[in-house]
Image (cartoon, helix red, strand yellow):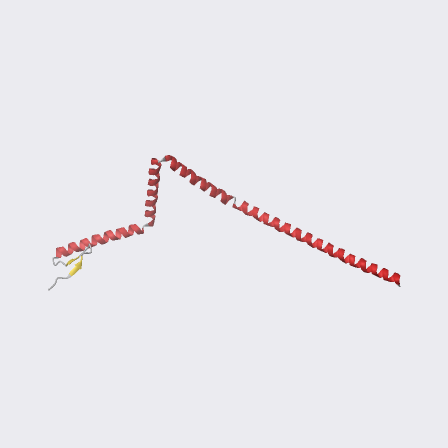
Length: 149
């Protein structure tokens, strides 16, 4: 008769023990491994504490970098501060820039409208001149024709 095979806590297959104390020890080892696995999973799923750990690591890295090369860190900090200042300034002046662009567009539209009205007036004046010239020509032709009769 062959002995039944079970998987141990480390995943290796070994013969199942018949001794109750060995079985209890195997169960305890499995429980301990399961407890470690659950603890590791709960640590991985605890996002706030992982974020705090990441922030602490970043802070430690920044402090170490500062200790190694203070001018570099000061320059980088000044650059970041300048960039933030630029972003704040751009967001505060955004409405002013939009209003200025809109005013330019409105002025351009008004200029085009004035030009269109001027062109229409000039066209009407040319037409009136042509019409008046035609009427004068017809009137002259009538006068000439009356004299010849």
